[in-house]
Image (cartoon, rainbow, N blue to C red; front, side):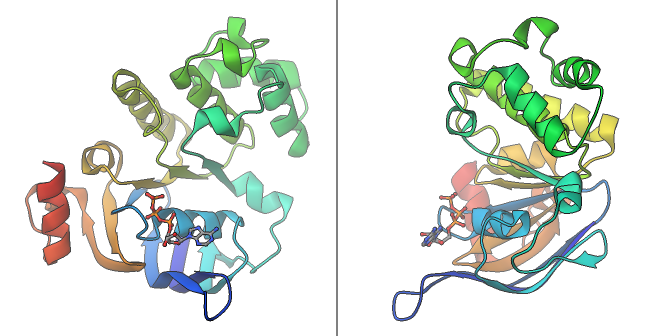
Length: 245
Ligand SMILES: Nc1ncnc2c1ncn2[C@@H]1O[C@H](COP(=O)(O)OP(=O)(O)OP(=O)(O)O)[C@@H](O)[C@H]1O
């Protein structure tokens, strides 16, 4: 579903250029859930943003569904396949747009008809009833906002969801609910996930495999099962496990 090879991503020009991702490579199969872990600044979000078309300064290969993605152009078909959910549901929803507006716009962008029925279904899918349809973000809790952001991403009926720390801005009590929702949605919709997190427990809950990043490089790729068994071969992976225990 997603293949990345020889990926470099940078910001700015020399001498101030920041090489945020260096020579990254991994593949994510259809239906798989893949985690990107590592400490702050290691380049995890930058990989997701480059895949999503939010960063232009990259080189290498990004293939989605067997087709190479071009450096700058992303068409409607791309966003029909790939959608992203951001970390902060407070920042990602426009304060003056009701849930109805957010979802109608997302559906409209994809040229979808039958908007009424689809909005009801999207709200149902993310565990929000019809009563939420005409609410504004300030009338929603953090968890409810993130459910709306997830519904917005699902509106395009994508197959690959890029999840950038989708629970880290939420209260601990709500995090598990959203993670469980993501687990259910993947099964129900046959989705593929790539999820960034600095929290190994979260990745262990959601993902099948993961890449460990350090200073812009992928230092290890392993299954969550191997991670649980402490089979990380890299010193840094062991350090991450100890740090999160
Ligand atoms: N827009 C930008 N301009 C310049 N440098 C950037 C930009 N975005 C990210 N960086 C730099 O790229 C590097 C990787 O950042 P990135 O956000 O991908 O890390 P991360 O692993 O996702 O960390 P975090 O968990 O803190 O988000 C960091 O050194 C960061 O400062």
